[in-house]
Length: 200
Image (cartoon, rainbow, N blue to C red; front, side, top):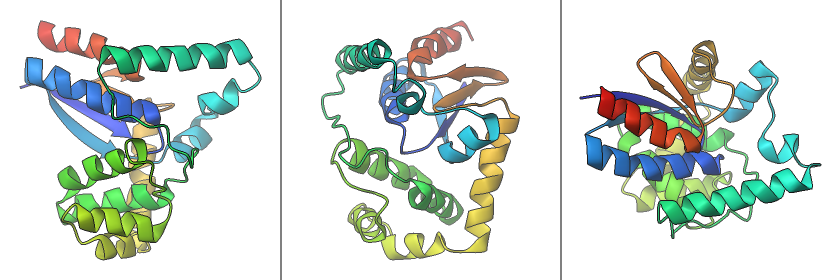
């Protein structure tokens, strides 16, 4: 079985799009996707990069094209549940720390789908502790405990370490993927990942 390392931050709609599209790739090829929570703000700070809405905010034609491309991706992958979050850009520090806490508690595989759906399908502001705790509780997790764990030094350091490890591996933005040592960046590389898996 081929394994794909998927580095994500909930604040990236492109990470959500890629996560959904890769489910189809997994169904067709047997690809195993391993999700790695990191902090996109930390990646930008370490690499001198900027989010697209900031980098191209003064280039109207670029912004219009980006929206067109998003709509094409949604149509191509039938992502009809997607809703652009009204709180965007959402501060994801809390939720990404909670993702680390979920990893440590062995419940990450339940955690991350619930949060992705909350932010990009249900228009919830996951930067609010009470909102995050409730949606995790609704998913069958101990939401209060996971949110509380975000304030521990261990979890804070683990997120910083994970983010730095992602940068050290070559990342400059999200979503970033690795098939072995081969890096892919962005939702638009999903088709290339599928081709590489098929060749493997």
